[in-house]
Image (cartoon, rainbow, N blue to C red; front, side, top):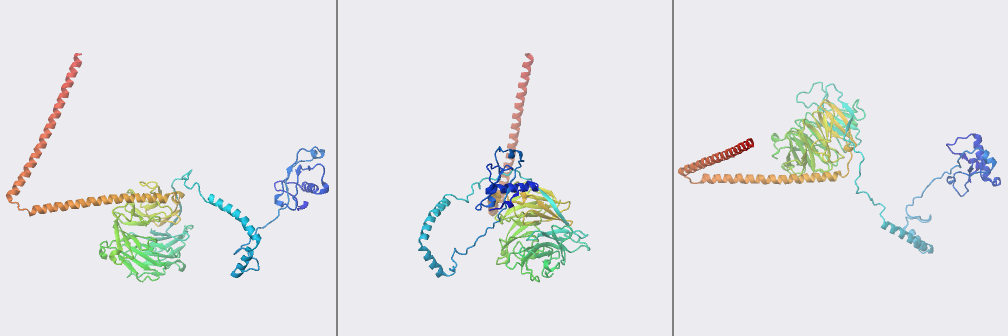
Length: 617
């Protein structure tokens, strides 16, 4: 029971102390048994019902205004509407977690004998049997309800969501990270931090042959994307870095390929100096254009590609010599003089034995590392571009389809089709220098060009033109990387600028039925190319058989016993037949011209007769 002294005026009603005291005294007079009057309206026109001891203060009935009062005292008193609440009772809910049932204190649930003895005792009790019989009906009712209705059923899952507003594709510049050195160098490689995506490693080098300045710095940098003023860390290689890649298993380690052919390994916890560096004798002879980490138990295996025609495998714990070597000879003879220079690499962790190499000559080589002989390591080749294949990237959702970027176009390939790509963009006005798939949208990929443009392509939306073309800068763009979340893009330019872009949600969030639609499109295009390839093969076989037949006929003629007189007679016959054919064509031409003249003469005579009749009339 709450005492009258605890009554108070609720917030929102400001009253003086006297008014407050009168309210309390009025409530007290009403609540006391001796203070009850014949008229149960108060001077505040408020009826108070104080809760009994069995009722919680939180459930107190609010004051309600009374009806018309005939008392003179009630009519003369002021009538403000006030709510008076008692103090609330503070409660706390707590529960008990039972490991196994609700055993009595004297029963140890871990002792099997005690639990069995107690169960038998309870089961003999008559109250237990009657309780089970009563609960059985309730449980049966609940089970029937569950069987009759699926509470987890989704009734509208097949309906297509209608979007009221679809924003147009867009991108905006977030930050620009500039080369802090006076002599600006090209950003030849980029790599995102694998965990947070808040750091970006950039490799800086001068790719123009014999144009490297003596004052040019050798450093490359790791940037914090929130701080474009200065780099977070400087990497100090022995030669300028052409490629750089974070370790997906250990975010503190990086591997880079140098301009002089060496491979360097960094641990950011140990500073900017490389922890390991390959020897010049065992390294590449040309710049290392691509380095990629391999899927391994130790997380220390990597491999590199260079224009010297070699792919080398390394263990970063010991870079004194490569663990394995592959020469990119298309004849599969291992001749380094005939090897094709490599400028791009592709390795998919879901396919640990397969990798692909893009070459300077526009050929893509599909290789198998676990092959028994060096000749079997080069599985097949794809003639993709007229120039170097600058980018090579498998679709993260459909690994059998991969993207190649080179010359003036980007192409999408299927592993099953060797002769031609299944989809391609139209030829652009500027060279394409890099490209990659979106990690979150399977149908979207990005390309950068020499004119400073970034193109976003959505093959489900349209194939002829890019969905978005964004002018990043006035310099040539050489490198491109997309963050794992798909929202941020980094573009490296020729003058050492790294532009951080943010694309709209339409290009960075998975759309409804996108995977199934793209899978159907890839399958359809692959079937079409297979049909065309089979038709082309038939035409080639027919031409080959026709040429072989003609050679056999010529051989039979050469083997014949024709005399000189017979050869002269055959030649005369061929000559006369050609002359007769020419005379026949000339006669036909003359007859045709004569018929046309006759028709014209008849028309002229008819016109003259018509004009004479008109004059006579």
